[in-house]
Length: 470
Image 1 (cartoon, one colour):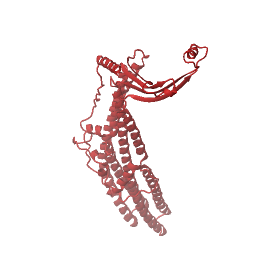
Image 2 (cartoon, rainbow, N blue to C red; image 1 turned 90 degrees about the vertical axis):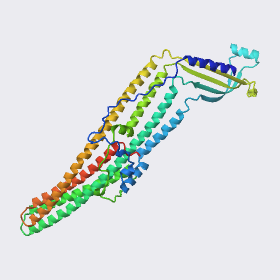
Image 3 (tube, rainbow, N blue to C red; image 1 turned 45 degrees about the horizontal axis):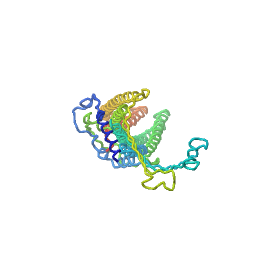
Image 4 (cartoon, one colour; image 1 turned 60 degrees about the vertical axis):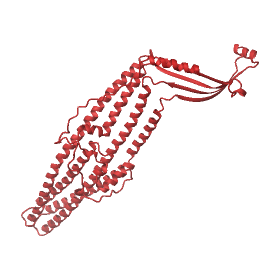
C-alpha cells in the first residue's frame, strides 16, 4: 500500500507541474435583433405566446382534439422516445469520471515442443510436459480529467438531451397549430356548404320561375337552359365541398392519432373566439421562448464542447491501471489465501507527438463546425423574426379584407332580391338574375375563406411567437 501511495503522490506532483484545467468558455453570438417587431405600434413586453394552449383555444371541441393530438400523435410519440433515449445516454455520461472495473477468470494449459528449450526445461524442473495457469482478477482503468475532456463529453450528452427535449416542444407547437388550422378549415367548409345549399334553393326557385315564364311564352328555352346550368353548377359545388369535408375530417383524425372518421363540431365559424388584439412581445423574449431556436442554440453549445474535447486530446493524459486477484499454476491451490494473491498498479502520462496531423485536423474541423452552427443559429433567429412579422402583417391585412368581403357579400345579397323582383316584373332578364346569384355565391364563399385565413393568421402568430408547447 505504501508503494501505491508513493505512485499516486508522484503523479499528483506531475499533474501539479502541468497547466491547470482549462474550460472553453461559451461566447453567445451577437444577434442583430430589432427592438420591436415590424407592424407593431408599441414595444409591449407581454406576449400572447405566454398563454397555455387551453387558454388560447377556448372551443371545447378543439381542446378535445388538441388533447388527443398531444397524447396520440405519432410524430410526438417518436420525439418522446428520442427524449427517453437521450436521457439514458445522459445518465450514462454522469459516470464517465469513474474508473472502468472488470473481472475476468482465465485458465490456460500450454504444451511446448519436447525439443524446445521450454519443453526440456519443464521436463527437467517440473517433471511434466505441460504447464497450467489459473487466473482470477479485477482490472481497473482510470483517466484523470486534467483538461476537462470528460466534463466536455458530459456536456455534449447534456446538450443532446436538451435538444431532443426542445425538438419535442417544437413538434408539439406544430401539431397544436396544425390541428387548429385543420379544425378552422373544417368550419369554413361547413359554412361554404351551408352557403351553397342556400344558393341551390335560390337557383331552384329561379329555375321554377323561368320554366313558368317559358311555358307562358314570356322567355325562351335558352333562359331555362341557363337557369338549369346554374343549378347544376351549385349541385356540383356541393358535391365537391362534401368531398373536401370528408378529406379534412380524415386528415384531422390521422393528426390526432385515430383512424379516419367523422369529426364532431358544435359551433359555426362565426361563433369562433380567438384573441383579436394580439400582443407579440419583444423579439429578444421570442428567441428564448421558441423551441426550434433554443434547439439550434443547444447545437451551438454542443459544438463548443466538442471543440473543448478536440483541444484536450492534444494535451498530455494521465492514465492509471491496476489489477489484482489470485493466480496459480495448480488448480487445487488456486484460491489459497494469501499465497495466491497478486496485484499491480501502473500509471503513466502520455503526450501525443505525431498523429499524422489527425488531432490538429479534428480541432480545426470542430472549430469550423462551431462557426457553421453560429451562422445556423443566427439564421434560425432571423427566420423566426420573419415568421412573426409575416403573421403580424397578414393578421392586420386580413382584418381589412374581412371587413371589405363582408360589405361586398351584403351588397351582392341585396342585389339578388332586386334582380328577382325586376325579373318577375319583366324589367330584367334571366341572365341578370343568374349573374346576381353567381356573384353573391362567390362573395359569400370568399368571405368564409377570408375569415378562415384570419383565424389561421392568428394561429400562425401564436405558433411563430413560440406558443403551444405549454
